[in-house]
Image (cartoon, rainbow, N blue to C red; front, side, top):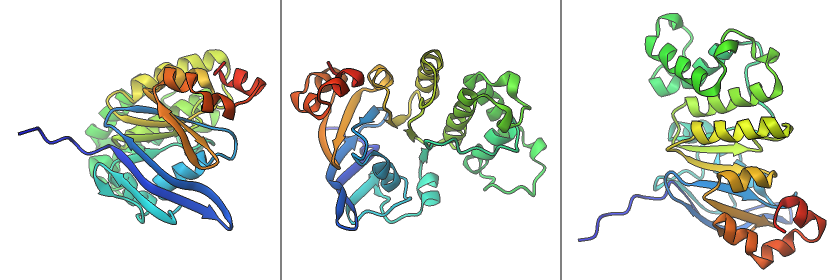
Length: 259
């Protein structure tokens, strides 16, 4: 008797979304294995952000299904999906600017520890929360900024904090939307290492324009063009795909790192 295969961490089946008369996502099928790292690329307007909005519950599909670890999540609210084990970061930093780094991270993990975001508790006495936050501070290299207000962090530090808040919930599936946007080359290099370390053992889907980041992190790369999945394969296979190269014609292909 063959062993039972675990369900996909994330599965999209016939997923479609349109705005008015425009099809944004067109019957997409995609299966992601537990622990797999997926880079999602495509020209502007390809539907990448819409796809993340559908998966995280900010938008509802017109047709198709979305499953998280074998259970359907399409139709659920974002907070319900988060509680089932999926967390997302955004293109624009989504942090509590008036709270310290420590307080931001503590807010991110309260629900996962069973405290349900209640602030009518003596938070300083929550040893398990404090210990988890201290571990995150070390992981994110933000220990020295522990008591700094988030608004006073550098841009790359704010992005690191947002990644920390995203993973603090304990979610097993992480969506990162343009995590290195606006960073210098040296900041990006450090951030790739941070993402790899912080998401170890988790399933990662990442929308990213920097091909160096994508090909440096992803196990497989999904290429979206006009809402359709043009290719979904290993980085080397995607780089050699003639259809993908055609989607990034001329100088755009060179800039994207395909040629």
